Image (cartoon, rainbow, N blue to C red; front, side, top):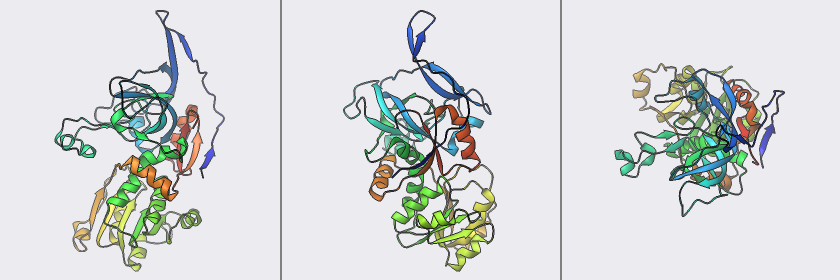
Length: 364
């Protein structure tokens, strides 16, 4: 069952033109898109010519695009090689409108998705060994090329994922990044069914991480600030809820014997660093959230209990979609029209969205 709220804020929308005559009298088909023209710039609604796919590419008619914290890279800049203007968006679901070259698998009209990974160089040592996830020069959707805050976008065939019929486009979009990241981190960790694990932060990433952890049979603890999210966390399967405002999470975890793994989804370096002392022996602290501030961790904290700290990004989008269907895991989302991308982004950045923001662009 789809859990989402339609959000239409009173903000003027630009007129959409299906086409107009170009300078040379040629009829051009136009699309609406959101773009950032420079680091720190506003989200600008523009009309531009629909791009055409090249060999091994497809043109997608976008139906839904999730808004992710990673989109802040385009908004604020600082990513090596990032060129402007750029259209963000890397949780994209749409239908193939045109093939750039023949394909035995992909067909016009097929519903597909594209996540963070926008392509591989196919030349580095990792790619030559078939380890595409470790590509040394990877392409990122919405960063290396224009993403899904638009009515149409170009995607490479080698990164497409078929969307199961059981999922709507709005449901599937957040699973392509937030879902794949959380499920991938859980499955790659040393934690097994029955182990005590912790979800730090109960928002866009955290509410999916909790559902996946429960489906994997893990004994899940949620750490968040305040009591307002406790009821929902327990409803989604949390055995224990720790309010970080009224207690010391690390001390509470050690009373339980320590965590086998802590999955950090809230971007607060200080809070993340303080959780190391809540790990059991051989425990893992795994950071899933995009955060730039340094953490203060003493080597002794790690050495005395053989603890480790690592980061995680990405995951297998196809596995995530099918696991979600089989286990009935869907994101809780608020839906916005394309014209209100800036409002949706701001609600995401200020943790006011419940729990993922999704742009509904077509017949999602």
